[in-house]
Image (cartoon, rainbow, N blue to C red):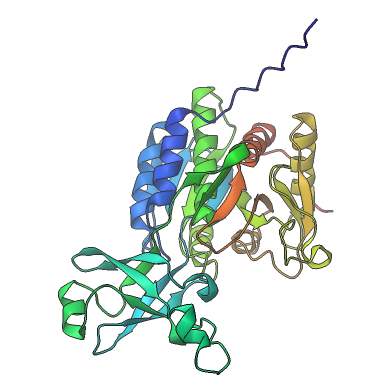
Length: 369
């Protein structure tokens, strides 16, 4: 008798969910200028929440059960690394300054959008041909912020300015969402708009399954993480949560040129990553570990040192201290235009946050002593 194939498990991600994810990843939301993506995100989660608000710098928050005194946060950050226009020379070439930890080595020959006063302007990172770089007998130049420039087709400073390009205009890469074989997704700014997507999906599942929570749930999409966790710092002081669950990306360490002795052993497709660190609350982490085991959600572990480098730090040390935990999704090629992650890890991370929320109550004992 022929063997029957095992039926593929039904995905928790709907066609509407995936359409939102693609649109959200493709929408520029550079540090300090996140409003485009934030508007999309709020429109998506509004049907699944009771109320919402934004803060003065653009952090967006949906709230479920807002009158409950006990407050739980699930959080991601909305901003993407980018560039600022810093100098325009008389030949119309545009020089830049970093806005967040953008990697200059991936810039040559990339296509970009300059977000000017008259709307987006197409441009490219011009880079000399290999023939000319190698033909003068000197050591080959490497890309640096100082020798990278944008060419938008203008041939004078005046022509650049006539396009609406100005000092301080922000620049984002053109590349957007795409799919590869075996359920891998690529795109720029999965760090960390995939987190914004996942917390929105948690809100959707709670709504669709008609779950009643014994606390107020704040779904927080914070701004300005990439330049020092600033949005989380502001919103943590405003909400004053009792518990915070943060989601961000972490390095897939199975790619070349990454030392596992330093970075640990994390791989895409093997589940969300849980971290040990001083800012991570040990008892809350144990709750999450138990939830993963009970619901058969595979997880991976890594250690972090003095800080997590994520919004977890801002929430953990805000106010009088907030028990916080970090649930990360493995990501290849961070801070490039081809950040890569696996669909199963997206689903696993959503499920882990969802079931953790169904486990927590105001009486959950998180006391260390």
